[in-house]
Length: 336
Image (cartoon, rainbow, N blue to C red; front, side, top):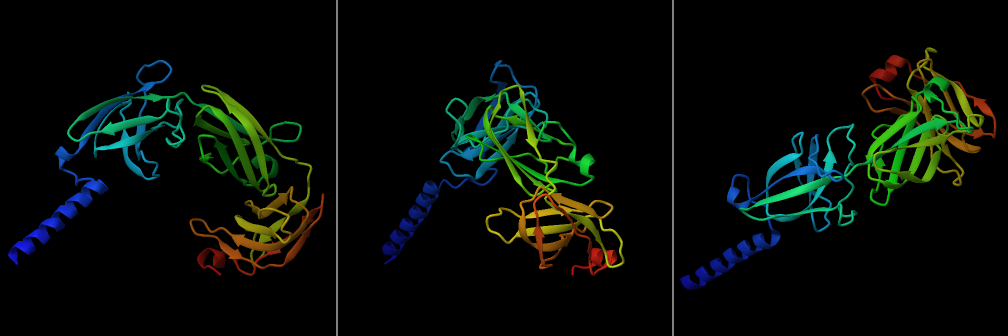
């Protein structure tokens, strides 16, 4: 009987140990003998010289899983040293400086073999590697009228514009511009891998329309300029002033329009300036559901949906003044 119990326990212990080996569960920190060490430097891919700035290394699961294993930062000369669990990693390389001339990392699973960094860490061993930083390019986006004359939307309309810029390419699923406004009529996006890009810019304030530019060439060490043209003469839309229950002009109030016609894509909206004024133009003609909003500073917006239906006619700038039922103090202090 005792022998039988001992055999059963032995099988269970062996099974548990075996399952841990198959799962490759990392050891707890402090058990240094179970780790390997990686040491190396980041060099300029063009000159072969050490870089003179700091980078972040991102160690990914080489099998294609999207989770990140570990972050490691270099010094300002690209040197790094780190203990890692034994494994095969893809290494992403990201410059820490906002003004870096090098590329930000795309997914390592999309890169060709020349640019992909692979490292194998072995238990109790030191692995020395040298990583190449590739020179990037940049894109400078301007707002312009239909004759390619640049203009500043903030100055021209005295409005805040919310503008979302999305870049895509064969090696990036998407590149976020890092900001959502073009108040000065200019947007600069750097640290891009050379290649062809598609730019999609969506505007709130001149109609929530989307403008797409394809086959934008980015070259290493160069800046590509792109004009996003807006038809300033298209007055299809609405303008007006939003006030509170006492007639006080409301800054950061909003108006939203959702198309009834399914052929019109997207929702439209705009916020008021400090004088309570808004203008929303360049819209498709048709019928829209109307809603109001108020953006309390540091708090989620207050929404007033279901405020009726409005018709937008071609080349007609419809006047629509709105008075909310609540005072500014009520709006600031309590959600309605």
